[in-house]
Length: 46
Image (cartoon, rainbow, N blue to C red):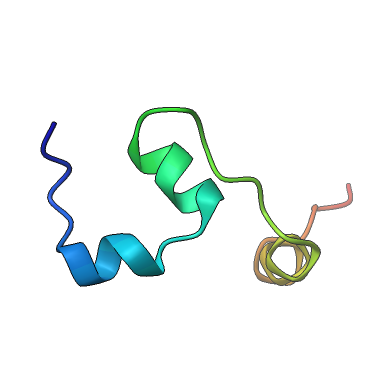
């Protein structure tokens, strides 16, 4: 199976990154990432 990742990159990947690359699903956001997205795209109040 060729995933298009160089060996040095492969060995630096976390288990979550490897799982995503292997087709196991999306990597969940960290709290910091979710908060950054919330600041960029705030809910609009009517």
